Image (tube, rainbow, N blue to C red; front, side):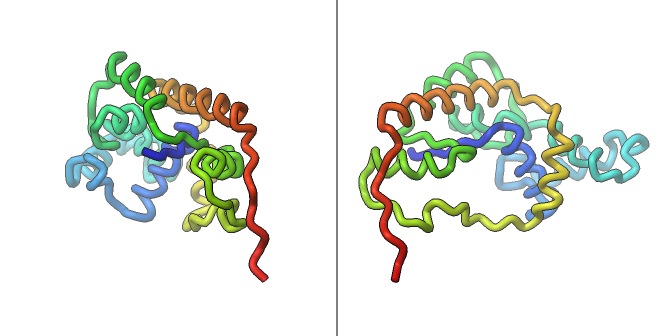
Length: 184
């Protein structure tokens, strides 16, 4: 399995934006259909008063939203509402070292170079651009700022293991690769 990790709070902010503004749902990630609506309809209704930052925090704290890396590396769905145990965290950390490739989104160019050093092939200039469109870039920044003090301790530990592996392998491979010339 080839995997690119991102900082857990960035992943969480992305999940909030995706769930609230793009998909308008969280089913398909392991959350029971309609569970988020039931949660939001009665949760802190008087304190939120539909304030956007309050909605972002509630979505980020919704049961099952955090610890996606830990759950998925244990064979579970990202949005399952599970009691994360120390054993699950240790299994996830161990499985980081079993993955075929680990990249880090915050080090995207080095990730592309490392991938080509390990698996061969020529890197093309287009590979060094993050091609994913930002549907809600301003809202994404507001969500990320709102969640700046949130913590996802299990995934932070998994991410630390992934980052350590990435840095170790990048140093060992020197993360240099041949880049194809731009097309004429």
